Image (cartoon, rainbow, N blue to C red; front, side, top):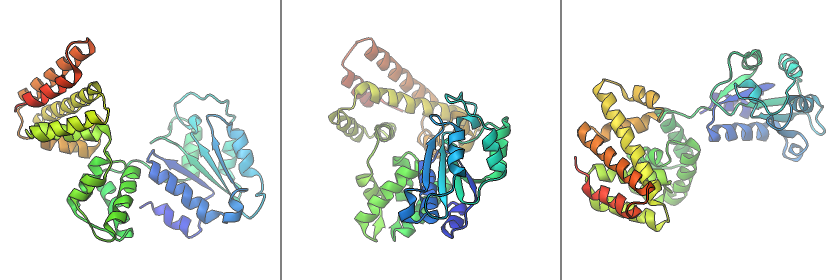
Length: 334
């Protein structure tokens, strides 16, 4: 849970907030809590402003922040996508002197919320340092495995729902470790179990899988030599009008990751080190390491070569797309 939410819900506000990170759930929940607790419902329409700073200058936004509330005692002003705090090039010519002055002496009747939209500001810029110094910083970075499990466990408790640990882990995998998506699916499951127990089977039956997650499961069945189940997953994807060439590309990505993880494991890398190096979620690196534990590197490399060959043949018009993937599923061996 975000500790700043508690003070916001008590009606204790900072004049300036900075939200760092890209996790949509945390960002939206923070904005929602500020608006609901700072503004009276009937006054919100008059005292809430949201500016996209890739389209509007900071001078206009600060002018709004400095203007007295039209109705009521307080107003909320949101600043989205402040590219002048990053290394990105601005489309708008921002004159930031007035913003600097505001940060040093914010008005007492406005809550200014800066939504960075990325995981860090450009620390070389004077204005970035000033914002971080004068604002209450709210961390909205994507949670790691343990933090995500904690978030979901707290939400399950709030929903009066019990769960199997394996079911929660499966939910995390199937939602690609995205907090906002995982919470949406958890709330849907809570309605179904109605105070009961969330099991692995319920998660597998109810969570809507992305193409990537279906291919992840397909890869798992192939690696475990569950050929029949792998074929059923593939045929279901084809019935859903997914393109064989897209499925093949994702299979290549999965086997490339497993190949890299196998090599790095041999060199003594830990799961977190592999995740950082390969720029994947730590739990995905952990699952890949588990998948390749009993597979020889030569078999992974042979599979990757076969997939690359099939991909090349498809792109050069040789063979039927569907048959290429089926051939790979039938001929995998490890």
